[in-house]
Length: 129
Image (cartoon, rainbow, N blue to C red; front, side):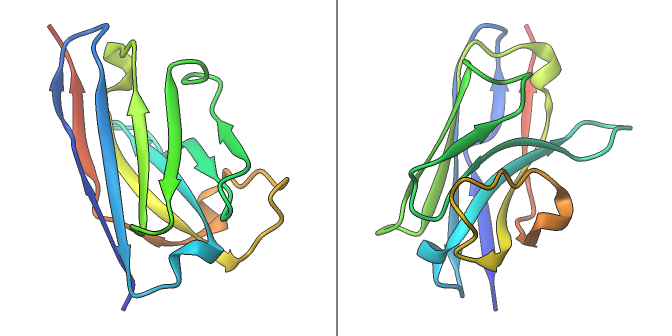
């Protein structure tokens, strides 16, 4: 059974930083592209960032480019999201996801919900003074 467990959410002031982690189990982590999505109240879930299975390619939503960094440690079955210069509009539940396919081409940008087959339960991130 695949499990993705996010942690690291919380309350942060505007301009501050937060680091999220997602530990995966029940799958061969190193062959899956991993992604982060977020969902604010009353809105649809949206793409934040993704990293290819080998870690060589990263992709970001325009809204977080230059502020957020996605990374992974295949030895620890963990994907990270470092969030800097945070804004109130970053407030959302953040979800970790694993691609539906194994070893998708590294150049391929996976940013649709349908591209991902396994999801975590989410962690709340609130940016407020």
